[in-house]
Image 1 (tube, rainbow, N blue to C red):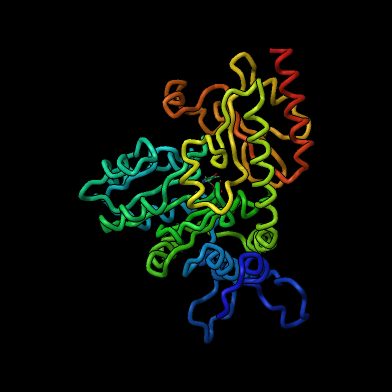
Image 2: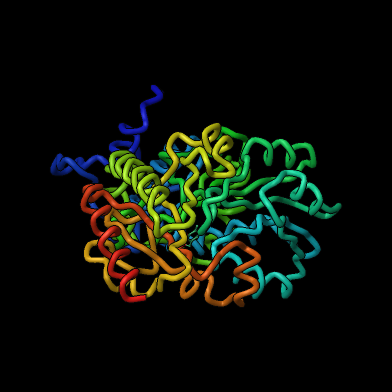
Length: 384
Ligand SMILES: *Cc1c(COP(=O)(O)O)cnc(C)c1O
């Protein structure tokens, strides 16, 4: 088959031809029951092989450059299924310390009970990962860029380390999206997305996705049928539609993010900006090596005399919300949301101060976003 370009893959891969009416887009099949005669694999929504689910899996696999893709009802359904399909009683796994809160909760709440042990690499340095590897270590799990400080892990170095130890690697690629980063090219085995974020992109779908080789996907697929975290046909159809505009959305978000990062960096009321696209970011060189774009996420600290809550209250366009990656710009306060279960000291150890604000770039005009931030900072200064 001809290898098409990314934009074409987003539009057309995995499309279902409407053979009856010749409609321009994939028809939506909501049936939970299909005929069984002459079909090898029986179709059933929990098996994620209904027409819309199957088509979407193919699209995402092509986007990440992997052999097979599977979609899930949430990012956490994807993450938990990947982990539990690849770990047995007595196994050990190494996690990067900067993890999505839900993933950390899963590990803390469930792993002991199944006899799975784990270590957290305290930094993104390869030597720190190496120190965590034991005789019974089966894999390494990373996030890059990470939440909320946008730290970068060197994917090639991690995959080289894992290959030398004959263990597998998984990455949560949510923050980058397949437009900005394709980990399989760097040797990572299993790529996971919370499709609730960039793949969906309009803050109206909860979904997850995994892409890997046939060998790994077989284990993941088999467990997915038992755990049952499949995506509804309707959401699959919505997500197919969303992905058609993924490249143009994400590139606009990248562009806004770098401009916002530069604007904030030069602002007298902002003390720190964390964006992997700024040459001053500690991991800029690695980011440049492995990313096609630096992403739409950044975070920053406002002056210690300013009250972040007043800042949120005075934004007119940018919405303070929990989630991220929609086409609308949003802000989030890690202290009260993603990292609220940690003590102040624990947060401090992870570099998350009470002044830290996470920003998710949308596709609004940059000058309107800039004015909104400028205005809210000014009011915050006067009222703090
Ligand atoms: C949101 C998120 C998840 C979890 O995805 P859900 O779709 O909410 O289950 C996992 N990892 C990262 C980095 C996320 O941002």
